[in-house]
Image (cartoon, rainbow, N blue to C red; front, top):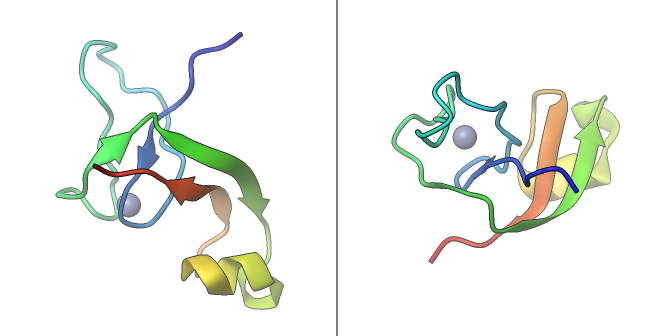
Length: 72
Ligand SMILES: [Zn+2]
């Protein structure tokens, strides 16, 4: 099974793997937000303006998101 990617605790975006594997990635949209691999529910949002899920997550940009991100 592939390693779980990181997700942003602020905007729920699934983050691409960092170039340096030792560092957790940083969300380009909210650089100060915590990131975690502890999340559930991978969703691909293609049309945020037409998506109920996007509304619930406050998503306005298409992309890959986690439904639920667990930030301690
Ligand atoms: Zn973010």
